[in-house]
View 1 (cartoon, protein in one colour):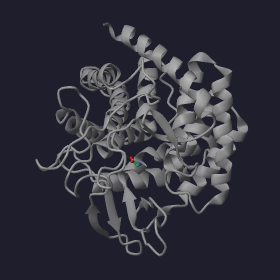
View 2 (tube, protein in one colour):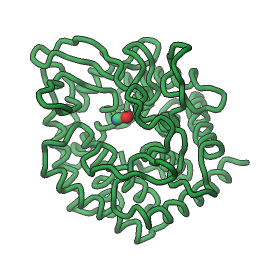
View 3 (cartoon, helix red, strand yellow):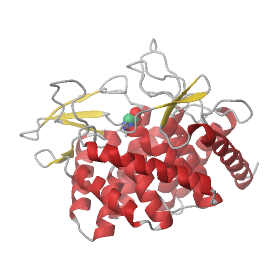
Length: 373
Ligand code: GLY
C-alpha cells in the first residue's frame, strides 16, 4: 500500500473510533485501557493532556464541534489542578501543552494562553540552579525527599518553556529549558546512545550522586520509552534553539533506538534485559519515537533524512497493522504497551499516551506539521 493510502485509511479509522469513544469518555482523563475500556485517572495525573490532545489533533482536521467542546471542558477542569499547586510536578509541560497551548495555536484563545503561561511559570520555578536541572516530582510519600531527582521524560516538558519565551519575548523560560537540556547531554545520554531514566543530584551542591533504573530494568539498562522521550525531546530542543549539538545527540539516540528494534519495528519495554526477565512490548515507546524520528528526518540534511523518516513510518505502519483493533470493542487505539514494568503496572495494555503519539504521528504524515509542542 502506498504511504498516503494507508495513512488516509488509518486516519479515517482513528477519527471514527475517537468520535465513538468520546461519547462514553466525555471530558475526562483516560489513562490505561483494561478489558477493552479506558479507566479514568485523576486530572492531576501526568497523563491528563493526552485525551484532550487527541481531540485537538482530530478537531484540527475535522472541525467536529463536539470534540472541540470536550477538549475545552477538559482544559477548564485542569484549572482546579493548577490552583491546587501541591500535586503539580514537572509534567505541567505535557498537561498544558496538549490542552491550552494546542487550543491557543488552533483557535488563538487568550484564556488558554494565560493558563499555559501560569503553567510555564510554575514549571520554571522547579529549576534548581545548583545542579541545573528541573526537579521532577514532589514527595510521593510523607517525608520523602526527592528534591534532587531529574528524569529524562522532562525533555518533553521543555517545549512549554520555549513556547512561553516566544509568546512573551522573555528569554528566562528558554534559558532555563536550555540549562536543563545541557545537563541532560552531560548526565543522561550515554556514549552508545542509550539513556538513563533517573539522575539523582545533591540539591544543595548540585553534584551528581547516581543514576537509577526507574521505569527501566536497571541503571545501565535501556528503558525504551525513556529512549523515545530523549529522541523527540532532543529534536525539539534543536528545533527551538538551532544548536547543532542537540541534533547530533538526537541522532545518536535515534541510531541506538533504531538498531535495537525487532523485526516488527515495535520495541520491548527495555532494550537491555537479562535473558530470564520477561520482555513485553511497549508500543507507546514506538509511537513516541516515531514522532521524534519524523521530525528529526525533517531537520537533518536531505541525504540523511530517509533513515529517520522511514523508521518513523515503519513503526507507525506496524502499530496500525499489528497493534490495533479497529473492528472490535476495544477503546484503546494501540495495544500492548507497558506503563511501569518494575512495579507491574499495566504491562500489556493500551495507554493513552501511546494512542496520542500514534495519532500525532499520523497527523504529521498527513501533512499537519505544526506541532503542539
Ligand atoms: N512520564 C512517565 C512515563 O513515561 O511513564
